[in-house]
Image (cartoon, rainbow, N blue to C red; front, side):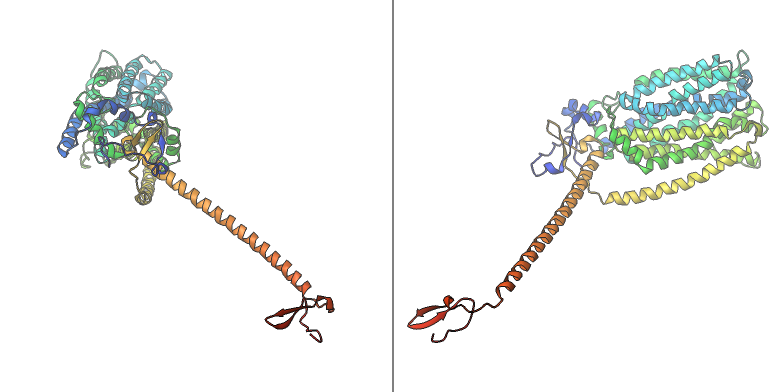
Length: 548
């Protein structure tokens, strides 16, 4: 792989056919920004520097993302905790009203997924995510003003609309900073905020449950929203928009941070929406397999997550004990000698949540092109929302608190998830074998109206694949042309043969006519004398005249 500080190879007339033309405006934003860091490009990246920079990124970035997702989980689950703290009674929720409040959160999430994908491309990721955190914190606190189901539904819809930005933003931030091999564990690291959020939320809910001045559920919403609002201000300054300009790295290390991830060939940041990448993402079977997988995983998530407190309370626990007992689910399995076996099964259900960060890691580490990456993420999150919308609806109010139909649906979805994951595995194996046969060229891209730019500097594999694809297309075109030429030649040969045959036939006919015998005409005879000897020469006949 060519290093960042090496000059682009000269473009010769012989290489021109193998080089695709691209506009520098369509290149990665980070690549364009490197023009301002030319003086730092000469220092090679040593293994010691690599480890030092990685350690620095882990210390300064991962805790911020972890806490951000923790607060997002608390805010999302606030209604689940408040369901047993008086919210359903004060809001006069009956029948499926509570189920629709849970589903409408994900309706907002789903509607915003496409918009978020566009905004992430256009706007600085760190600032965008921080602003979204502040907005949803305000919405959460204003939920205490709702008086009925309609108000709660509206608040939940807009809360989901804004919260939809957090997970896609975090997964893309990880792809900016980390190598492909480093990404899965970092994706899981920030997703651990989900688990710790369950522990913290249970403790805070237990404490808030003892408040007498205002309804406990209102105190819970104000507390969670206020903490998130303060944290959003910190995130505004703490989360950099890209490696270049990161507050915790000196300028030289910022450039090295870009250099260390160029082998990912998946891009860092681009503010241009590329239509061909959108189309490519929608036509990729992996996109839809991942989407189906997330759908089947999140039907259980929507049902069990939203109704967790109600289900556990139905086991026989008191309201406050329910909040404490739910914490255990996040830590370990429970000995059935002390707790009912049904609760044991409920504890094991939480294991499915590990699939979410792994899915995001697959997208960020294996999808080339920033636009394609955001498109695939948007499709997967739409499926995520669809599952969470349907999940609460299969928890029928008439079946409370055991919800047998709902848990039957959960089992069916888990079985489908296993089948889809195997299909995805076999498809990836087949595709990897096919890609192993592709030779990635080292040529550069010729910039329109300017010097050549290295394909590796585009920080995305799409450039290499474009060249490879164009070569294949050229080969196919050449083959087609050759076939056409061969066909034309064959046709010409056939025509020539036919013409020759016709000419031969005509000649034969003429010869036959000339071979017919005619009466001897003595006027045709001629006498020649050659070398003292008389010879007779005649036309059309071989007779020698008498007396000759």
